[in-house]
Length: 176
Image (cartoon, rainbow, N blue to C red):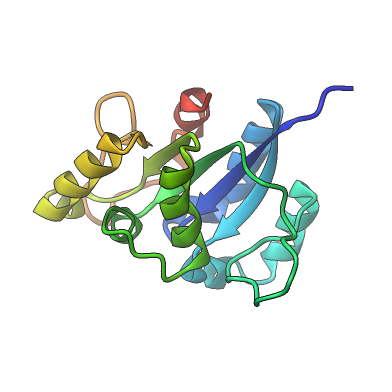
């Protein structure tokens, strides 16, 4: 019997998070056992839909750290996909800030040498901020595949993004 590899899909609060089911289904079709982790803002955006997403993945949706002594409810990941990755998350991640479960997992993943892919979703004004270039360069130097520009995500004009054209396939193709 073949078992799927475990992928943590970490979703931040950006419009493609409202289509996270699409990302989950595409990852499952590619052979991944998907566990969904949301930033606190993404969890607020998805609200009651989280029960439906848990049914889709077969795992609880996580957005907060567990309490000491509580067991892990998710199997350990073999890879992590941060999609959509926001300006905020990319910059906090590069600084080693782990004030949410999502950031804790991705900061730790670097030290664990897990394969990590980030597919941003941001606008051209955010992309023009100098902190982003530094953060992306640093994450890449740590082995994180950040799919920004070129064949990855190309920032859109402010207020002109489309969740429907988010390139999930690009991110999935970059996973090991």
